[in-house]
Length: 439
Image (cartoon, rainbow, N blue to C red; front, side, top):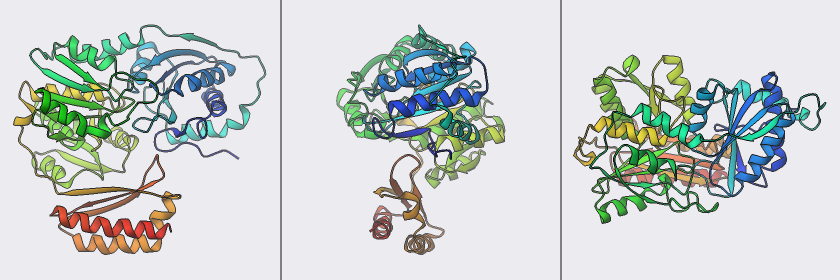
């Protein structure tokens, strides 16, 4: 029977326990068998976690054992993989990363030859071939080699896209989360003329996302103000997310970035379908503002793959999440934190980020509740009753969202209400209901 391994963003877990070298080997071999292609060419890239080298060696061995030509791209942001797949005409890419998770986690995700993440059906085919991964006929033995200049190739793609963007005179602070952007992010900002300072750009294998990056945006917010930088950007560990900070230290999340970029692209007649895809986590104030500007809004489940599916179905190009995962299909078939930061600067057209017209958000409270079984906790009758009761109380004034995390053993409880106090009170009651349901 096939094992169910893939979640909303590949296979993810604790390195050495859940994500073992044996599993990486088997997934690599199964991926080649599932493609049904002879000698496919496969790119493998990773982030800066200490487990990355072990998993890189293991999955490369598995891929090669099934006949693949394996190209090792080294440390690169996740969004570089689909760009390089297209650039070099490859059949598959593997990214070894756990994104914004702690260093002890790692993950394995696949991109197809078209640059898009594999579909659920393709992932199921890989899982179905796992039992065939132990042996081999020896008839097809692949090779493993280093692919040179991958960082320069990625930088070249960014430079070509934003070559008309001049950042001369801009003083920018970049928080690279001690992750995959630590070399390429400063490089492209400098090439475009910015004066660049960095924090969290010295990875040691264990400090990725450690009190830095987009999940700890408060750090760079303080430093932008203290040092007088014009703007700050914080990436996550694998570089597919970004959040911004203006010179006053105000945090600009993915919701607001999507709105600013959407207005800009609409004005340039570069917003196909005059629509954007967002998730259920987007603050409703932004939904209202986008619609008021004549932009159609489609809401999806949380996860970049669902945003991407919506964009492809509708023929749109722009979408994103509050977390800073922004997709602009005019550049790449995945979220790209560096490209999103540059696109925001392009949208500002030289104006200061702190001079933008701001949307007044509804106060939002989000709490992550640790659970053993995230689906069972959400579906417990007492939790369902609490959701219905609190939703009814906020009808027409706010909203409630309780959902299991797609990548971690958590239930996420989110409340939007007219006041912060009410949002806190409603959220506390829902959290208590979830905690009571899981004992």
